[in-house]
Length: 154
Image (cartoon, rainbow, N blue to C red):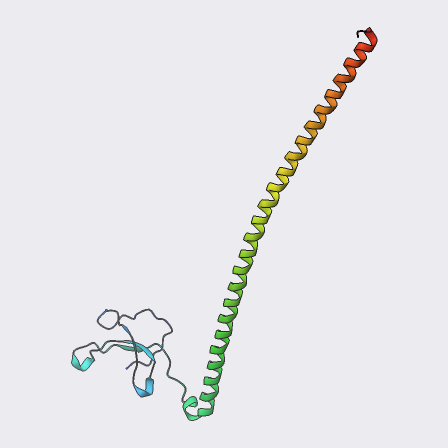
């Protein structure tokens, strides 16, 4: 058995020049360790290729269970941190959705205000036109009156 360790998850070529499948050890001493290898051992006609991907867990951890317990606490703290971050992400997404709704409401109000402004401007223009017509009519009346006063036509 080879004791070389690799940190890649790309299949190795075995001694028969075939890709060795990625497997996970289920033995008590190497539980959960990943390796490349074939089910058929060398004794049964296989090529016997075998290579660990994950290094063997430190003996130190097994000799000192309080360290393992400390590592488990850190792991759980990491999971708690992940849960907190997930909740924060949900909160931020909810706030984003609320802000989108407010933005849509504001855009609708802006459109309504622009339409109202357009209507007010149009009404103002109409009022100016009416005033201009009135002034023009008054000028015509004054000119006609002046004309009749000068030439004495009655």
